[in-house]
Image: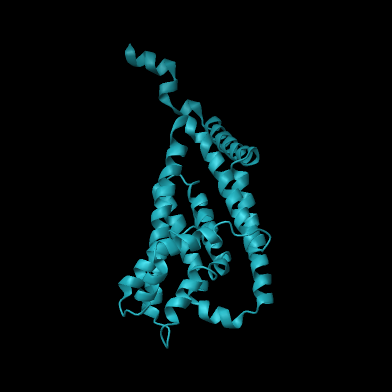
Length: 259
């Protein structure tokens, strides 16, 4: 579970510069209407996003648990690991600039159709954290390859709470860059940003490859070896016991007692 939480946080953190374009743009649009950054609203927005991510992780973890615990569906858990690994690798290729974002236009279109842009402008003018929190909730539902990669990893869990924890950790991983969006926009040059994104992409590819391998024959073989070692250890412990120390294993004692 610790490895899963760490991987989820890494996906959110390493892919957070990708969020600067979409989610960060929303924060910038809301803060630009004020002379100074209104931190209570910005933090409420982040909490809204994390709330949505955690809820999505809860659902993903529940689905994953059904695949993991119901007989023949157990093999489908391996397929989920493969799909999650492919999603993470695809995201990494996009972050590095080697693949276009398949959800960019869809996300913008949904934002226009739902009137989210006007809602954001209205929320930005209010000195209440509730509208900002609501924007975060809605933003968490927008199509995003980074979010889908996190959800894919949550699908490999064996319990609903594990999926929720994974996506909660994922959300926390995106917060540092999101809170630093205004500074990042000014401080990081395009060249430096490109280099950082490529480094992050390579690390994500490693995480994706490990996740993918868990669902393949390689991962199953390693898991089988671990189970076999554990089994052998138990048999060795049993064989090392002195059978004569157990009176129930002595037929003569039992016969004398009966007589």
